[in-house]
Image (cartoon, rainbow, N blue to C red):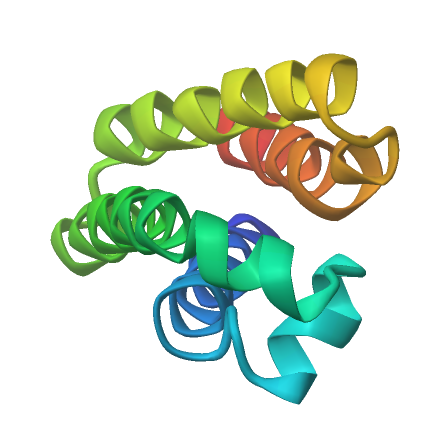
Length: 114
């Protein structure tokens, strides 16, 4: 049960990232969350939409694995989230490690051992 809850939480996080990046990037909420000035937000909006779409694919993959009850699928997509989170933490902002990678690591450990 813990593995399911943690994996669903990671999926919901990525669904939230999709919404923020695809629909709110240039809006006050998106600019506040990502600390963007209006011009930077406008200039990077298409890139953010693409990034949001990829986050949606991660959420869909996790939901698919949960729906099927397939640990292998869940572990694959959790691994993708961990890699993306580590890369983001190394190249963009350290907080991505805590917001993205660590929840996925916790879910993967729970999925593997419980």
